[in-house]
Amino acid sequence: MHFSEDDLRAALKRKDPGEGFTQRVMARVEQAKAEGKIKPVNGKANRSLFAWWKLRPAWTFAVVALLLLGFAWGGYQYSEYRHQQIAKRERQQLEELKKQQEEAERARDQAILALQIARSKLNHVLEQAQMPADLDKIIRRQRL
Amino acid sequence: MNRVTPMLMRIFVGLALCFMAANGYAQQNAQPSARLQLENLDKLSEKASHFTEVTLDGPMLEMAAKFIAMDDDPSDADMIAIIKNLKGIYIKTFEFDASNQYSQADVEAIRKQLAVPGWSRIVTDIDKRTGEKNEIYLLKSGDRVDGVTILVAEARELTVVNIVGAVPIDKIAKLQGQFIHDGKHGHKNKMDSGKKDKESSDEKK
Image (cartoon, rainbow over all chains, first blue to last red; front, side, top):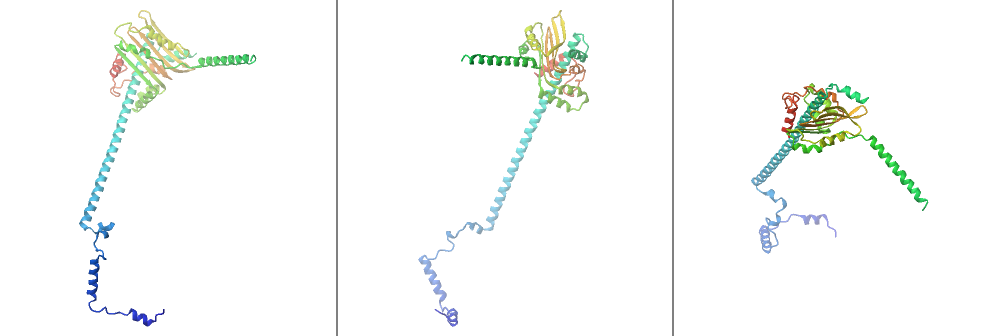
């Protein structure tokens, strides 16, 4: 089937729909609506995932503000928790250090007391035995 | 069968001889422990009016030496030098209100431990009037002193000082007045009297 240029021009030429075209189209639309062939434009089915975007700006700001508040509160709580943890750890380290220091002090006192008794008893025995305090000589004599 | 039995007997006797020889050698060369067992004296603490016990092992002495060194006091240098070479100090002192509160068996149990080879008595002081017997024992390994025990057995006092390690005994005897730290270490003139030693220790107890 061949179409000439004139055929195409004639086919694509603007045609007047005639009077009452709008009324006819509207009447057809109303009829289709009545028959249920056309779905309502603002129906539930048209709600998409991004429907919230169409909320009023005030609601959007409220949601954003709530989210920001939530984040801020969460951050504050986390920071408080971290501070508490650090403080607890520091307290434990301090207690441990204190305990170690007390232990070291006790060890020092015991060592001093031990040397005091040792010295005192050693000199007492040497005095009683009327021996010179120069034990080096005695020990050396023992070695020979 | 007749051939195997004498061979087994020979092997058995040979092994027994080897074991005995090894045991004898080990006993000869075994160094007696410088630390004495003083647990048998624990029962005397109930009778004693003053009882002092000091038990310091190696790590405790190390800690004490480090803590004393932290003061940076040159007068503590001798004390630190003494403590550093020690492996342990074990002391038990009992002071009684009356005589004959401890038995000779209590003291003999200590002397028995000092009667093994290695230990030698360097000082003995006997007072027959009072029945007091004070002794100083040394544990030597060649030229090195590995331990010292001072045994003071008086009518109303029994003291055992057992020091383990390279003991500079002459330095200990010469530690005159070096412990007098007025308030520095929290004690006052501790070296002045033995009585104070006991009291301070009893307070700790």
